[in-house]
Amino acid sequence: MHVPRAQHACHCSGLALLWLATVLGLPATVHAANGPWKIELQAGKVDRSGLPIRVPVEVEGNLPDGSPAQVLLPDGTRVTGQFTAPTLLEAPAAKGPQAGTRRDVLFMLPTFPAGTTLKVVLEAGGPAAAQPPRLAWKEQAGGIDLEDGGKPLVRYEMPKYDPSDNETRERTYKPFHHVFDPSRGTLLTKGDGGQYTHHRGIFFGYNKIRHGADMQTASDCWHCKGQARQEHKNVLEQAAGELEARQRVAIDWIGSDAALVASETRELEVIPAPGGTAIDFASRLTASAPVRLEGDPQHSGVHFRAAQEVAASTKGQTYYLRPDRKAALGEFRNWPADPTYINAPWHAASFVVKGQRYTVVRVNRPANPGEARMSERDYARFGSYFEYDLRPDAPLEVAYRWWVQPGEMTLEQAARIAADYADPVRATVR
Image 1: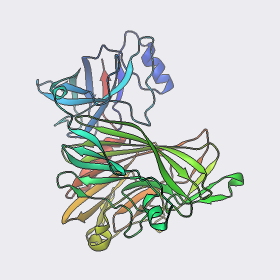
Image 2 (image 1 turned 135 degrees about the vertical axis):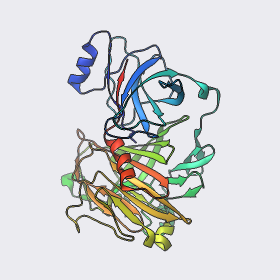
Image 3 (image 1 turned 135 degrees about the horizontal axis):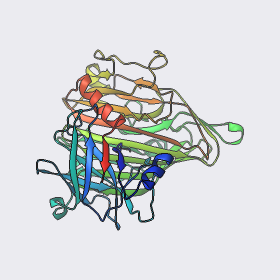
Image 4 (image 1 turned 30 degrees about the vertical axis):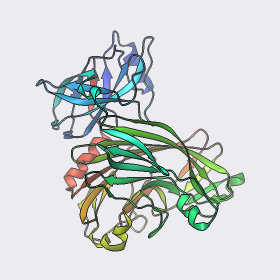
């Protein structure tokens, strides 16, 4: 998952490192003996209040993911920060002769209006170092929960594939992530069973995959028909701290011929914010031979599916927010019925579970491939897909932000979340 890093420049002794990073299109960072770092932040055109800010720095030694930090504000107050490793799709930092280890510092400011500039000081450590972190991963039967103060926030479902009968095969043919409302413990997403059993939480797949000799083998890793499926392979990385938790997993896409079609590295980064939860999904899909990914908006791409209760009883209360307007109750929009519904920077579903309304915003990373063809349903399954030619030298990389909150949102509020992700804070580190 991808939290957009702050756009930044760094001032070193001389301009060689900054010049090299600019020419190569890499982030430039400054070597420091683990702080303090002086950082100038520019909000730009977006109100950043209460939203995650990420700034890359270089540290000495092995500063673990999740290590605490503190940010000193101009008025003398301090906010909690956290050091994290770079996200899955981030370019590596430029390395100078005395360069340290790339770490990102994550923090949130209570007030950071659009058009303002703020100078802060970042220090390692702080009061949070003396207590257990707020977020923690805990392994459960068949999955791993991320808990926020002991309450579930997300769960990675990683079933062991079992084709012994149709029921167990259906239950185990796809890993995915569930999402909870941590304040109430309510599960907001659907698992196996119910209407369209293959719709599960936050999930990724394609129903029309061509591969093999002369591209003549067809596989469906969305419905997971025949022997086609996705299998959890292993957890590659997992870290959690006071502000953020990240999980990186390996998933094999198996074709209808029971052979490996593609290997996926999937990352979920979760940040509880004052108004909701930011869930950043990122994926890198690789293949050792050419693979053609095709499909349609309802059966391919990265999607969110709300709990079965929505399809069963509350879908008449579902509505969508889009950049141009708020839709009517029960109205949904799809490509190609609407051929203009492509490349939307964001859209959001508002639905009711256990008597509570929730709104989930899905934001597209601008660097994702296009043409993104959009999909919505009244039972709150929504996302998009695009066609892609996967080759050994051309992996597929995608990222999205899901913002989950109780209650309703205005168009302006959803647009702010989307703009923050697409155009992050600019930061100068000294």
